[in-house]
Length: 326
Image (tube, rainbow, N blue to C red; front, side, top):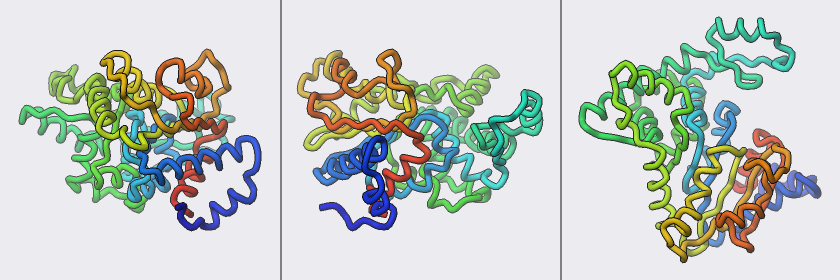
């Protein structure tokens, strides 16, 4: 039985009747139905959703067990923490479309890294985290231990060392909510992130060893083990925000298990939704329609499939509001 809906959900029901609007409603109802049947949901996060402060809605989804596992880019993993410790130093640039190369260079010289209309402060965000996460990496290496990128971030949060810097309400950090539940996270291509770059620099200076951080292959085997244990019954759904490696990497675990490990009884993903503003195209991953995933052994013929062609910074919080009954 669905929970009582609040004013946001009632507004959506009243006004969202056609096209992408009703696709949002259908996807949200499908997500809710999947959970009602006892299914679990993976959420994949691409783009700059943490800098867009998705944590305001996603953290509550995690606390209420509406998401069982997350796949995200290294940027989204770290940028939630950056927003947590440096929020007051961020700068908005509303006229970002009109900036000249010289104005962009001026931002660089001020230590401001621009993400669309928002600038992340180099010193207060990147460097503030760097010193503390290095301690986690070094401590593990000295003890002969190895961990995944997200596990080091959990250690950082659980240690309490960052609390002195908090500049937002901790309840709005999805990483804090995830750390409290020890939520499984997969971070494919972590090397392509600020912390990944910083870690590589320490390796080049011979201050750390590359294998102190577990690899992408180990993430795939970690995900495969998780999927085998959690895909029975109503199965695992796939809610994809954006495109790219955050979605492509984890969705491939099913054909890997089925085709390469010959586990012919492994269930397909049991729900699929993608929020994307990519142009529909069979020539791109992000723009491919869900039916193409049938040919790759990712989705079944009868898997509920949804595409919401819109801006995820607008759409995802609305879908989450529906799931939370807001």
